[in-house]
Image (cartoon, rainbow, N blue to C red; front, side, top):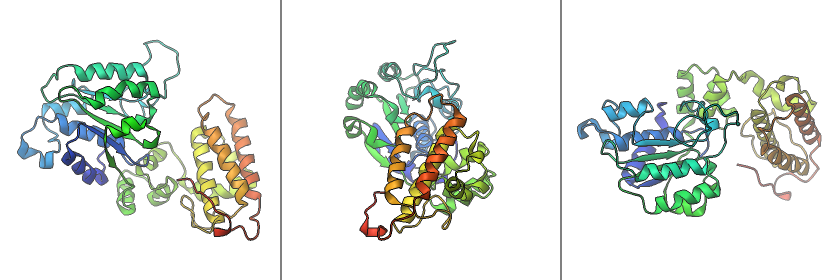
Length: 348
């Protein structure tokens, strides 16, 4: 598990709450999943109380070692098959969460399947193997479809025995209201800028401040981009490249990251056009443009983003995306439309 210093205070809040079901929610890339695992480790810890300050895990007992080795019999982690490897939890299709059968050629699922949730409910109802209760961690909880969520609902309402649940989410509004109402919410915020930069720098991230800004202050996303080999020197040049319609630097980019980057350019162009400061790009790198054109572009990006992992022809798709960006960014701002004259709802 990653040691994330900005989660120390939320961990203490979670342990003090003592709820059987917690909804850990906040911006993606701040550590919801890591906090869920850390909580599970504390709930299952068998160490003496004097070795567990404020109820945190001791890190030395047999239970803590089992959690670290992903083999604790009383811990079940539900994550979509497509996220297993990136989260360090085995390979896609592996494990108890209803993954693909061995040898299956089916594409790893992006959802937490109803079969996996049914297995988790059965797991929660069995007797604890080590006597500290059962723990279920779901991440991202919004990946449960309505049928899967309803399958979990009764168990959340009337938890069996000492079962505890940590639901991790970057989009809690996408959860069923009935799921949210049965959990105690624990909001997470972006970590302090200097703390996040120091943490990234300690992990060998060059120009950590620039990469953190590119990721909207989300340090885990910044670390992921660094590990993928993202060249942060290209970042401030991206709005200008798009405005000129230059697609060459983006060839080979994964389409989900390309679409996310375009959304950030659009967000900052809307901000600048409304008289506000950019969020993701350095001041001066994004120019004002016609607000209606930017709004239409934002809607197109949202629509395309729903199909980002479709097996498109990547090269043609990048060229099409860049051409759409060029058209939206080249529309000059209409005189008198800045600021309060033309209201703009900026995406979060």
